Length: 470
Ligand SMILES: Cc1ncc(COP(=O)(O)O)c(C=O)c1O
Image (cartoon, rainbow, N blue to C red; front, side):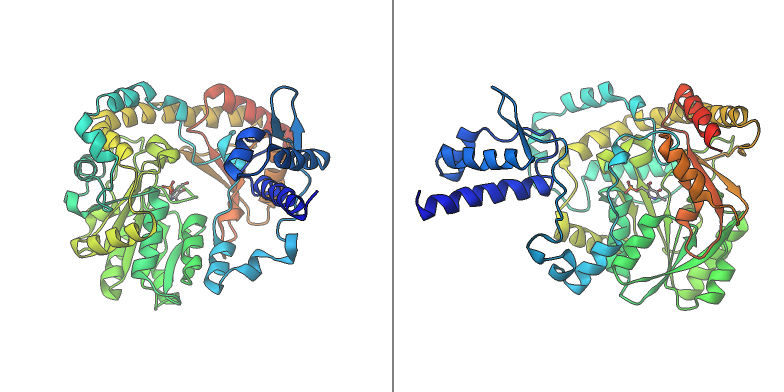
């Protein structure tokens, strides 16, 4: 055997093994057929077969007779960082390290949500048939247009439909030209951090609050300053006194994440006054603002602002589904072009075809109808959750009802170790987020019960299992 053959075999083997380690071929995935693989690489089939055989001997690959090679369900533990003696830390720039260390970790259990995982809408209620009909009704001219590049600020019909919908649904008056489409609210927050803040700037965040916001700020070198939340929402007087240099505040006024408080009118006015006096920005994250169950729905904070200091961030992750990756930010005219250019720098724009269908879905009134239906459903599920938990726990878990949102927070004394019950619940297949996970300095303890995405039977089963772990 020549030296060259040996090298080629080794190369093909290493390529395949690192693709398996990196998850390019997941456990159980079928590997390319050896003949085709050899043709693509320009090597002999024997070279590929040798590599596959070695991977099989090492436990990476299983061969199924007559059906090719598959990645083993449990591959040998791959000390990825240690291979070759190089760690990610050594490879990354300083900025890269900060981003990698603060970035959000993917949790595969998110693809199989179980009660009481929060933030899950009822995805099985998504109007798939209607969506497909709208896709089929796309004209040829639109199909061709959607196949090419788009305005990074968003598909004009979608921006127009959102502007109209915001007026009806959230009381916000804005022009279509102020609406910039983003890939969910996370991207809107990222653009805000990149364009309106510098490393070392201070930003007020709710404590407890949403980790996705805080992580994004930290990744940009921005100092996220914790401000307590009481039953009227963010304590802005407290925040203003303690952090006088703050240039921006991120709030969830409709349904504070995670406590579920609705910000009072007095607090809203105080927050707006602070922003005006400080020449600071307010970012309103209205992540589930469509889900209000009382006779009167409160409009967005943004609708109360007389100057352009509130940036309204909206998402379709809760109203339709996070997988769509459709969200938007409402901006003062002067900022629109900068946001569009920054968006284009990283990923150009959101997919045209999805934007087009969503535009028609909203403009034809389907979104309003879908939300009406979901509000009914979620209200009933919230009542079922409260009832079933109280019953299963013999009153130990008696949750207070809420007029908004998709989860309920149940608070207990600051001395309770809420992680303990969450861990015990997790062992029994019940996903129960502890409140302490969302605290920075705050010492709030308790649990979050998501209910929107689960039917009454599933909520009942989880409540009974949880009761056995109390
Ligand atoms: C407070 C808050 N903001 C925003 C989001 C939504 O993020 P995205 O629109 O990027 O899916 C979530 C999702 O869980 C959230 O809890």
